[in-house]
Length: 164
Picture 1 (spheres, rainbow, N blue to C red):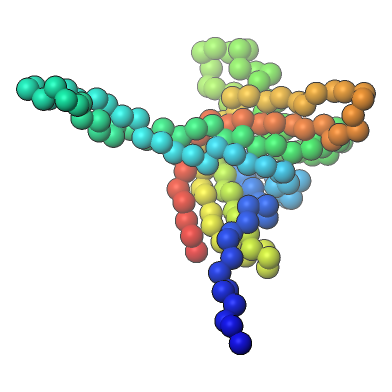
Picture 2 (cartoon, rainbow, N blue to C red; picture 1 turned 180 degrees about the vertical axis):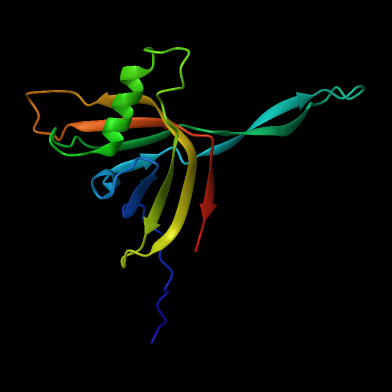
């Protein structure tokens, strides 16, 4: 009897998102997203020209650059207590009210967990110092029976990757 390979590729559809610093007691509403993109880090580079060497330029890494994190989910009903939506609204409503006061946008930390079939954490990304840069609603279209999608784009300083 042939031995079956027990190795399977990791799937990306079972995950959770956790927020800290929002002051809510139950984070279950804000953990439901249909997609998370932007867990991406790149090196910025510098080009150095070496005297006497005309065939090429040296390219060296300089700083790391993290792309914005994009979270998408079906729009929750107005009566639901989404702390993430309240946080975004506070930031966008108050950003120009007091230019010289403390910033109304309070950065938060987040964790994105990739889960297995038993809901155990396979991989974890800790996102540090995130704040909203874009908040939009999907298209309102009477010809389609689609869920209205809320998209939240966050800037963050960096993430750390952990694998338990």
